Length: 193
Image (cartoon, rainbow, N blue to C red; front, side, top):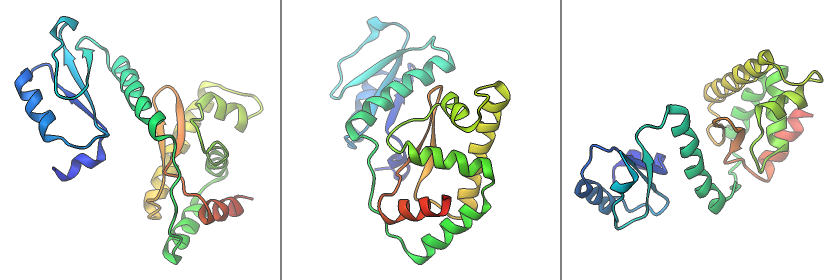
């Protein structure tokens, strides 16, 4: 299998591919977690394939396409849940995490704490605003959150914290991916107190 494919769970087939070309690719891709999507001019173009294929009309706007992709990703998420993984807590990992933690400003720490407290789900930007500021949501606060999330990601990369990340769910919010249970969660929570 092509090395980069393990990074993806959804494969989108263009409407310019023939049915035969799509079937050839389906036979080649053996990863069971893949979800397949075919763009089509009309719903009457639906073809029967060897694997399940969802259809999307070509006239979808970019935002509508994102919404559909979230639905497809969500179907897969429900089956897998927001699973936690065991963590090898080496001295290097501890050092990287401490470097990362020390680089965060007050707002970034508060956002990360909220995401840790909501470990099993997605936290909306509106919910973050309500938790972080008594005044609640405003356009300015939403921009601050987006900016802080970007800064947290950058600082994670700089400190070589690669074991989890913040995932953006378009128009839904944020959540921590692959959050580590056990000693790292405890260690991280201790740092944040």
